[in-house]
Every structure is written in structure tokens, then in C-alpha cells.
Length: 418
Image (cartoon, rainbow, N blue to C red; front, side):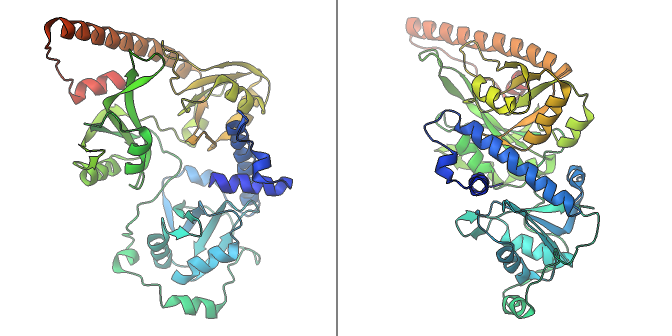
């Protein structure tokens, strides 16, 4: 959901301005935004459940061509405006939009019309934002629409727009230009190894390049401690981009291999490193406990942020944010509640919530916690070895004036970072 729309919705409900809700000078503003998003998500879930939406169907991989989820539109957008936009491509069967006004579900009467709408409106500018569309899962609805849920777009209005709606043969056959966008990551992801990055290229720049491609999950740039500046890091000139499926990863490689980013020609290939994606269904299947591991945590997030965010759902027993030997964050954390029920509530309410722009990925920590500790120890030893090697190389360079360093190949990088 559009984070700005979420804040506008909460502020409107409380009868205050958005600036009053979020104080930019307050260090807890990011936590407030996350809690506001969790509150809106809870209201949205209840609204959809009351209207015959089976939320468990989102765990299914199979998609329904007639159902479209509409996201990222500005706050204040009405259901009539959304209906007018989509009715240009065919007859609508049902329209749902919660009072929060942050997401909508559109159901067409026939699949070809829905495919045409999806193809033409995906990533289309709408007011001050860009529309994000996702095909809904199979068996999303448990009943037929009621009178209030039936789309009622005037026939004359539909006819006025019908001239603009052109359905291609590909759309009728289901070969739309955009692949299905499934928000929750279904199982392990597939990583693409990105080599020859400019040392100045940031994670944001790499993400912006790959984000428009279907199946994009997350991008990372591998870094190491800066020996000259304590607490800072240096890019290692390579990274990984994760996709939902191997096919989508191959599409990314064929599309962007050789692309020039920040003056460097990128070299892409499939990595042996398995991605870290975790779906809601895999969370439910794992054993429950009072301890949660939070992944994809922003490096800027502090222990205080987690105390405030998770403390809203129960009494916390411990909060740990593991760090590297240079005190920089590792990107994950452990939160333990006094009661398992409190952990379940936090998992339920914070699923899909963003903190400092990153979507939190959570699962119950049992064996994972132990494995993570082993991983911490392994990575600590590896980084210390890298720093020692770098210092030795610098000493030799100063003494001899020339040194040849053997470049690691992609297999070594995969083995080091998987």
C-alpha cells in the first residue's frame, strides 16, 4: 500500500493532519509509520473478510485472470474513479475498496477485458502516483457479490470509453505484457549475480534498475568494512538481485546483461546462492514459538525502534540486533515475547508492514535462531580475514610498489555469501 496514503488515512481517522501524526524531528517517526500501516492493514483485512474475500487464497500460486488488485493510488481516490478507469476495458462484476482507501479489488465479467485492463493500466500514472496492479488469486471470493458490491458504471459512460479500449490478440490469449505480480514471495527466491558494479553504485540505484522487471524481490550490494573509516563500508563491486522464479531471473539476465549503470557495463549470470524469500504460508507451517526472527531489516533500524514497534503487541522478554565486529547492523534481529500468543499477534498484525522503506520478513525462530548464530560467527571470521588480507596487501604495495591480486570468480563469491 502507498505509505503516504496510509498516513493520510490514519490522520483522517484521528482528525489530525499528517504532519501532526508524524513529527520529522522525532526519532520514533519510522515506528509510528509502521504501527499506522499495521492498523490500516488490520482494518482492510476485516473489511475484505466481511465481504466474502478469502484471505488465505493469497497463499496460492494460481491466479485468476478476471480479478485485479489495484494499489498505490493516492489517498482520497474514490471507488467511482477506480471504476471509471477500469470500465473502459469491459464490464465490471464487482468493486471493493475499504474505507481506508489504500487498496481496491476489481472483478471483471470476462477474462479478455481484465487482461486488456491489466496490460494498459499497469504502471500507468494516475493523479500524483503510479498504479501498481496484481492479478488476484483463484477462489478469492467465497460468495457472489451483493447489491452494494456490484459495479454500477453508467452504460453511457462505458460506451464513451469503449472506443479507447482495444484488446489485442495476445491479451485475449492471456499473453499480457506484464507477468503476474505476486506480492508475497512464494518459497525460496532465485538470485542473479551482478558483477562489475561501479563502487559508487548504491543499493537504491541497483533496485531502481531491476524493479520494473517481473518477479523482482530485492537487490543487495555486497560491502566490506572501510579500514580507513571506522563504522563505514566499501562496495566490493558486485551484488545479487533476487527474483521469484528461475524463469523471471533468466528474463532479467537477457534484458539487462551488458547494461551500463553508473559508467560500468554489468555482467549478469544465475547464482548458486539461494534467495531468502519467505511466504506467509511457510511461516504458518513452521513451528510457533514466542521468539521471532525479523529479516530484511533496514540497517538504520535500532534496538529502540524494535522495542517500540513490537512492544505495542505485548511484553517483550528480549530484543537483539546482531552487529558485525565494526558495530554495523547485519540486517536481521530477534524479538522474544513473554507469551506465545503475543508473538502470534505481532506476526499477524505486522505481516507486510514496512519499516524505513523495507518490507519486514518474519518467521518464528527456533532452529533458525541457532543457524543464524552460526552464520554470524562464520561471517565475522570471514570479514576479519578479508581485512587482514587487505592490510597485508597494502603493506606489500608500500614496500614493493607493485602487487598482483588474483580476482575471485563468481563461484567463490557464491560460496562465501550463500
